[in-house]
Length: 225
Image (cartoon, rainbow, N blue to C red; front, top):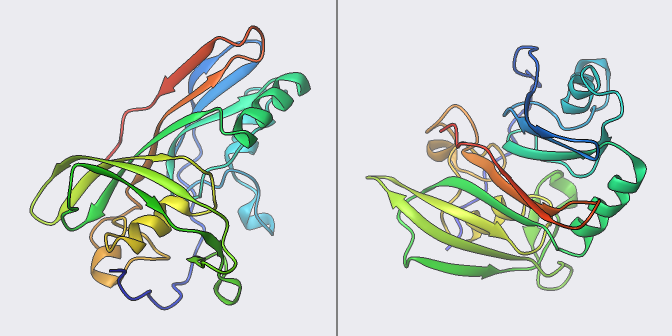
């Protein structure tokens, strides 16, 4: 059963110290980077939110083009294109779900079973944006495959494979199972939010097909928590 949702928590943007991004791979079409937790993918509203992955990457590669985003609190593998043709090719892969994404998360409590699927439709919870919610009336189909890796006294480490790509999908689906992700500012109750100093969600690997030739390429980033 889902736990009660917390009251809205204030958000103060405090990006990690300015430093060169960790480039995991690059060629004439692609750039894979290791996004740090706490850094916006794209600029937010106002000069205080100008520092982001895009601005830092453009200091290294001025031809980098956005393909997808990760939540500010999520770390891990992001891909950028280096020309419009590659951007279109990669964008279609994400749209048609040809990519494979694997996330690592630490969730509260002990999950039952070794693996399973969450099939719950999601939509925006407009009065409480950016919160998303489960809605069988208005939600879009959303599916997450989960695999249990390990557990300790109070939490479980899982791999999460999103079949669809809805906003906050992994966070809401874990909350709906009764196992919010540790450190989740939006969905976790106080004891789970305060259990760690960051959201324990990491984009560990991303597999796409190369825009030139179609061969698969898979890039991984070690989990930092």
